[in-house]
Image 1 (spheres, rainbow, N blue to C red):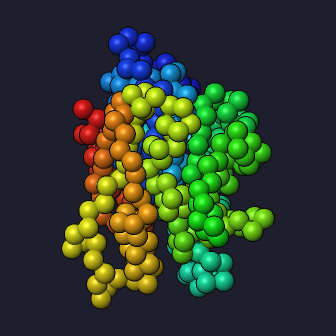
Image 2 (image 1 turned 60 degrees about the horizontal axis):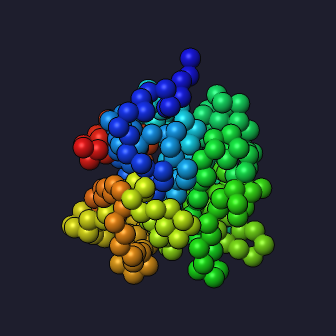
Length: 296
């Protein structure tokens, strides 16, 4: 029997957290999950009090996971034990056609990511942002970038009510080269990290009180492990450049004193990181443990 998160925390001495903000960060998403799980169990926040969740890239994936309100044991089994290498896989064919398709991975990976969770709650894979809001009563803000204008796209049930949730999340995750972009009406939707990797600013501007926000952000470590070497691939080279550009130039944020904020340090993402994390249950457990240790 599947239980919901709200059954696990008693409404005693709960801080007044009403908004969650989750940055992009690739495999650090597992650490964000561990952080959210353990802070919920200890009573830092209560799913019943959450009004909005802002997410960029992998943060948007985690945002949908949380909004579905599964119990933590169910989510642990799903996130840790699922053979993710069968979802996030790199075939020779996809790499060969990457130039023609403008990327390697396609929309179906996000569909496959959510499919079992949606099915268990009788939610259509084509569920719109408006429909998901009506089901969960949590307002999602999913950040993407229009590469043609370099403007922020804030997907929500207010701005894009009829957009499919899967399309919005995929658009937010679409790091150039790694993911094929969605192109509609002369808008090329790409990774939200180019404009708002950690969208605290937009959460506050939309009316959230800073003291009611719980934010978590990937903080890059640029050391020798993130250097481009003779063994690096073309894709590693491009991803490294994109991440360092986002971190050093485009991701300047105004400082806000918010209710709770946690930074998770991590080197730039590589193709090997994705493959290793998708293939190794032990690696996923380790990443979740890092988030859990930051929950205190």
